[in-house]
Image 1 (tube, rainbow, N blue to C red):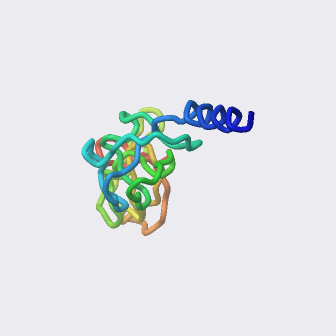
Image 2 (tube, rainbow, N blue to C red):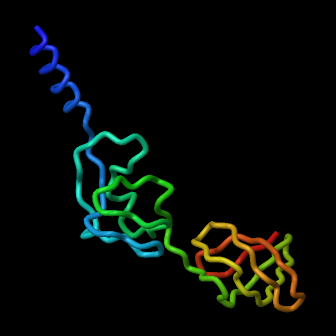
Length: 138
């Protein structure tokens, strides 16, 4: 009877395993993930990414180690603005548009909020990164 219960538990444990993606090499932060960087592993890890489309072309936010699960917060869209880049600050209010030059105080991907120093007034403002690399401030 014990043998049967142990066998049943092993079978049920294997049935609950899921496919997740793990790196085949160590991936440093800021590196873009390519298909050749990933392999499928049979293990059930809550919160681990299993869809290849969710990882390909994304940027590693933290170091990703060989064989370890990748979680959603470990990756994100590639940054298009680096710290100290010169950027265009854009303010829009109705039909009024004001554009000036700024310096990025952090890195950011499209849609992320970052801090920027307005070079004209030397004040720090926050804004959202646009696809063209400019920053929209409100």
